[in-house]
Image 1: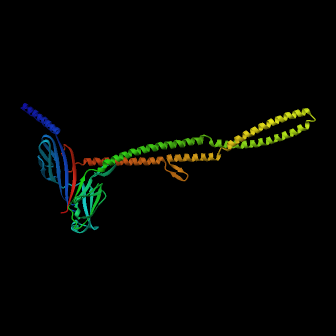
Image 2 (image 1 turned 90 degrees about the horizontal axis):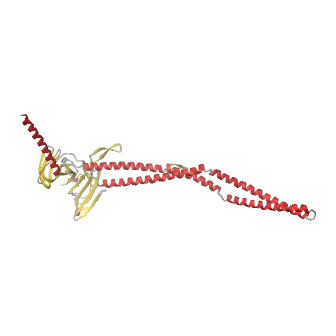
Image 3 (image 1 turned 120 degrees about the vertical axis):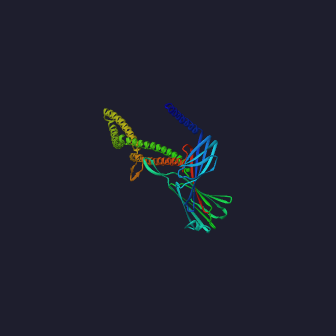
Amino acid sequence: MKKIEFYIKILFLLSILLLYNIQLSFSNSISVSDDETIYAITNPDGRIEKIVVINWIRIEGNGNYVVYDNASNLRNVRKLLGDGRVSLEGNKVKIEGKVNGISDIYYRGETDKKLPVSLSVAYYLNKKKVQYRDAKDKNGTLKIEFTLKNRTVNRVKIKDRIEEVYTPFTVIITTNLPVSKIKDIRVSSGGTVTTAGSNITVNIMGMPQPEFKGWLEVSMDKISLGSIQVVLMPSSPALAGLLNSISEYMSGIEQIDQILKFQQDILKQMAQEIGITLNNGNVEDSLDNIGRIKDGLDAQIKLLDGLDKDITRMIERNRKMISLTKENNKGLLDLLEEEIKDLESLRSKIKALKESSMEIYKLLLDIPLESIKSIIASLSRIQMSLNALAESGTVGFFMIPGLNMVREGIKTAKSELEKNKEKMDILERLAKNYNSFIGRPNNAKKSSVKFVYHIKFE
């Protein structure tokens, strides 16, 4: 009896291992893709009458397969196209069959699940708000106003703060109108009007973050509309380009900040060097000394000039004495003649000293002391200005915003850009992860979803 129980256990374990290998082989040879289109059929004012789910399941590989598609709150499930079999088992749609390469299965179902973006439509006939039924077959201008509100609030952390962001959806409102009936047509910002043959195609694009409003205005006789489609896709065409632009702009801002820092350092160094020159170079004392030297030379020249005049008079007297002595005293005459030679030599030396002093005096006169003092005062003001430019400050009666303030502004801008980039990254991730509405197979390699509001007027 114990041997039989032992063999049963062995067989049970072998069956589990065999099943595991079969599942592993299946997972390696079969791949699944899931694409959902959610159609919301509405009346003219946007109220939903029915939500129909069309699901496209693609099986790739070879062999038999069984796929369970998570489909909560789905009813009235039935296959539309494909070779596989479709059935509802609890909250899952079972798809089974055999594939040799690629097999596409389409099935439908209905749900009452709330859509991620709501729609409301308002009508204005000749600028007066009306119901569509009251505008139908009337003459004039009909304005159709669409309001879409995003319901997908997500609480996320951005720069150490919890913020509320909405999953990004791209909205495209489109309709076709007969050229023969339209007198005039206008659309809101982001809209385009294209004529092809006998039809006018209108497209209006936007993003409900959290709300989007768009409008279409047509002038026609006997107003009548066919249908309007409002397509919603979890995506934002502008996000990728915006993220690239933000990255490039942040790089540019960093370069600007580096340049400003370099210039700020240069300004501070220039101010420091001027300060050293003014404070340690004794420029003021040197200028005062030059002034005193000029005054001393001026006094010396005057003294030499007076001495020259005195010696000249002495020489004249000496000549008179020589003239008088020639006849009476030969010895005295010799002395006087030697003295006049010495006086003439002294006068020539005094004259040379005077001329030399005059040259020095002229050179000193050429030194613009007042200009130099003005330059020194200007250098002092330049030093103050350089410091103000580098670190902010007051020059005269004016407050100069320095490069440090500019750099602080750049740092703030960079911080805001980083925050916006982080938010854009989160939005992009939210859009990418919003890939199913009713549910997806657990082993799906890729999945996607889009929503279509079908506004019917008949």
